[in-house]
Length: 121
Image (cartoon, rainbow, N blue to C red; front, side, top):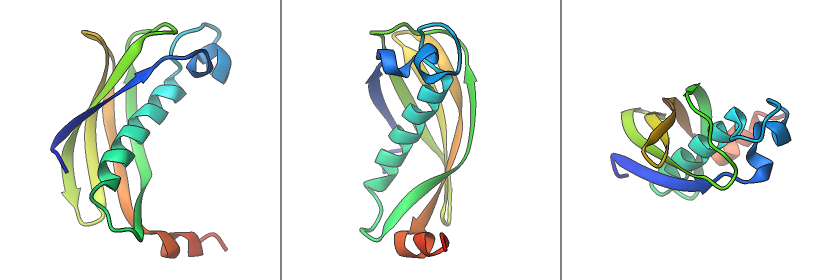
């Protein structure tokens, strides 16, 4: 896995605080930013895992620093911060052009799919 990576997203109407119910204005919702971060980190990590493995989110801290309007392109930039056993930690920033709109840390855990799903019952 590359030590750093980036993934772009477009802010659409369904990703706004107004649409998601987390606020009353049509700007990128914090829950949508969380999903973008998890998606970017999951996708990058999944490239390195075996077919029977996946990763699950375990922790995320985020600061949502500035608004982004519908139509804006935001970029999640993440860096591998720590990899210890099954725990993988990323630090990330979210930019709209040169404007920093978010930052934080995200932990994921590598799991065996079948074993993890067996815990549902």
